Image 1 (tube, rainbow, N blue to C red):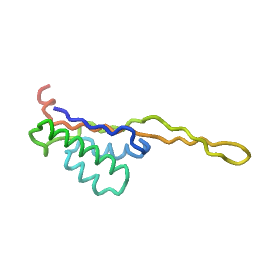
Image 2 (image 1 turned 90 degrees about the horizontal axis):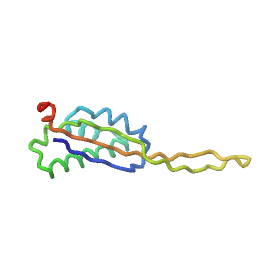
Image 3 (image 1 turned 90 degrees about the vertical axis):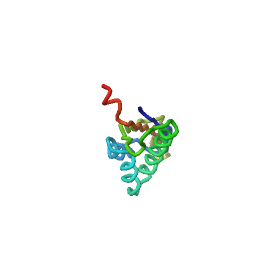
Image 4 (image 1 turned 180 degrees about the horizontal axis):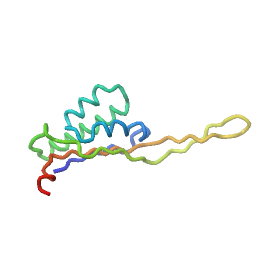
Length: 116
């Protein structure tokens, strides 16, 4: 069975979060939390919150072995971009793009692979 958690409109660029999403993909949920806990980075904190939420969803839905859950999917998509303008010299303007991310984490217990 799969257990999902999504953090939409995270106030950070997807490019900054993706390396940590690839770091935890394929690992157990407890190991992923330990990896993210010792990384001093704001994007690791955001991803850690989403993994904890997915673990809470699994516990709520009655997962048998929470210790054996595997991060089967961790992806970061781009959200809407807020476009602003920074005034510059001689009446010109430079664009500022505030990027926003959607973080998706899916935990699975590995029974789908055995059933296939």
